[in-house]
Image 1: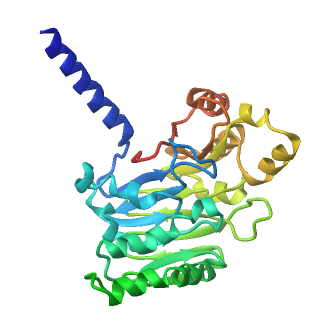
Image 2: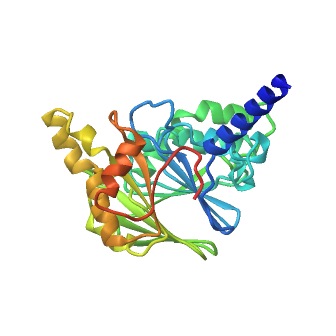
Image 3: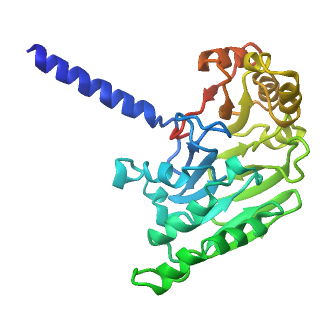
Length: 309
């Protein structure tokens, strides 16, 4: 009897942990925001590189290309025990990029090539700031030996899925529209980085705003006011206080503290605030939430890889 109780306890804990690993907080059958990676340049084992998926009517849209995004995406498909068919690698065809920092782009070759190897048979459509075309063309040049071998060797494949139609934008406003989604880009301040952007996604039932990397921005306030979800980067205020003066100077103009985000949330009043690109710097999740809730009493979530909203 004791052995049976032990087995049942282990199974319960396993199922509980599995459920926690893929928290589904979505209240919509039409639109799901999936956090593929909530990390930053630090190689945290718990946080994959910064990347998101927006799934609308079973169509996936990728936002930013941090390391590990294709495998994280695949982990949510039925093949690997998940339930989101739309995130199969071969279905990843449309993507958006906030800026060209490495922690947002080192997964770009993976996004181009792995879905093709897995069967994508049409070019990707990718939208991003100036420099996207240069980066894309050089990635494809770097992998020409691989591409040529797969196309002209013995491997059954196609000659389309590795290709990329890139679209650079320079102006604020609408950059993409289809039957599922309208995408608007707005400039944000990320230090002196010349082309950093946030996005507002409007679907049939949700408005979701993604800050990208930025210090507190009036454009975020403008575009996120009344949104269903504001997904915003953040760092721990307590952790910030432990940094050297040169790092403090850097982070003040590149990123947003918990207290600053609380002020943004008070101004915008979104349905949910979700934290990503999180710099804990030794703080716990509870401590970061306490910092935010000291100024803002609304609905806030610490984002984890594979969370669904």
